[in-house]
Amino acid sequence: MVVLTNLNKKILIIDTSPRYKLSEEDFNLRKKMYIFSPEKTKCIDPFFGRVVISNKKTDSNIKFDISGMVLLINPEDKTFQIIETYGSSYDYDEAFWVNEDVFILAGWR
Image (cartoon, rainbow, N blue to C red):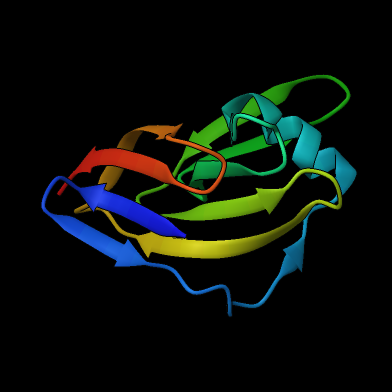
């Protein structure tokens, strides 16, 4: 998979990172923030950690942090890989899929 992090740089991501699992509740809580691939077989969350959402029976809270992660998620089994981590000097504003295997992250440093 190739991820374009800016207009001048291409990074090849090799599928060797550990896989983690989201609970059904966590997956559904953040689902509106996910960017799904054209065939919906995977999605990315470019704001994980940066935008923290919590939901209680009486209210929902949204908080912002200075660092974040980009996750590649399998929506079927809720497993994910951490593609990238970033801090306060870097942020993503937009993400979209070019095809089923390539996505672009747009942001600033």
